[in-house]
Length: 441
Image 1 (cartoon, rainbow, N blue to C red):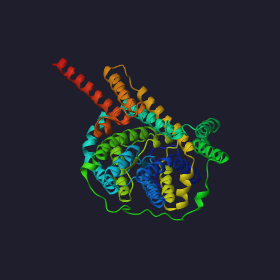
Image 2: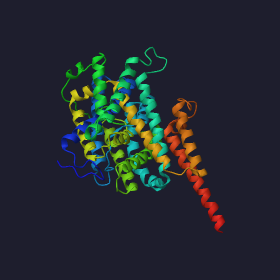
Image 3: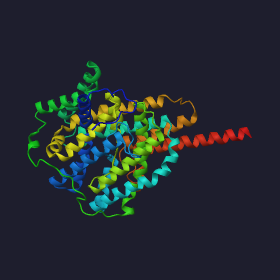
Image 4: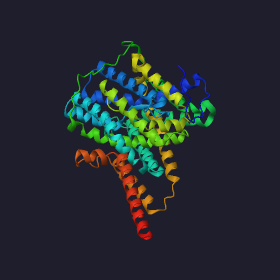
């Protein structure tokens, strides 16, 4: 199979062996997200081990299919950019809440309804894409970075107040992973520098083995094949009222997808029409989420990891993410690989995530810095975005006594910050337009 040429990439001439190595690196960076998502669902809903492995297999399969679709594109689906798709963090929390309040069949029905809603809402949403200037996208990326660093930092330390909070071994493994990644980026050039993230992951895993924390003995136990099951929990139940939180999130997700598409397209110097690319990104999110719902997963969407990995490794080829998609599909079907993925040390994967997500913040700052912020509109738009975005990130539970729908929007720092910046910026632009019209009359 010959993959099509990349769009504006400096990696076109790489050999397939190098592309495979880079794809493995990409998979290792993002693998924590599907594993964490499935384990959260399994623990909350008390799934058995076979059900958990089956759901994890289905999730890897959807991530792989999504990566191929977004990377290569089919018709009006797929961004044709170096993207990998993963379960969204907020949708997982909503999915679990719906399942606990009703049942798992209703939660699956909510995923399917939300996937269809993407297609219905997209024609309306695309009319508002001109409200996304670079400094607002930069604000969103900065908030995404801060939120994800807090999230994965918390996974390294554990729950505050618990008996095993902030174990030195976990922190040491995470810091060692970051250190080796940075040293590799400093010491090497060319292809080896682009593999710095993988070197950090491997070194951290080796340290875990030496410390006796990492154990791969369970990889060889169990079946060889893992076949994802269609409608594993029975026929879904469709309830619009139960699905409402996820439907509201779909709008937020489209905003995030727009920002991620714009940022990634800029990094790889894409010459595509960005508005059409955003629409193809969202359609692919909808299609893979719809298929994922049929296999029992939550929403599968584009992720901020893509931006961080592309900028960190400078691997801009969508060949690489397409190959990564094939690897994810292989993992999904080959059960020992699923078990191997679950054995990667959590602190090591989280340490890698912290450095990758920090790069996303750097990209956001760079986009903000390009805009002259001396005008009142941009100053207040940025300030309101950071204020409304940082509050729920730095003060968890800030809106816990508010209605659930309010918590859904304001409690999501990326959504609250981005929407606030867009609204304030648009109001100032409208006011300036009115003033100019009065002056001209």
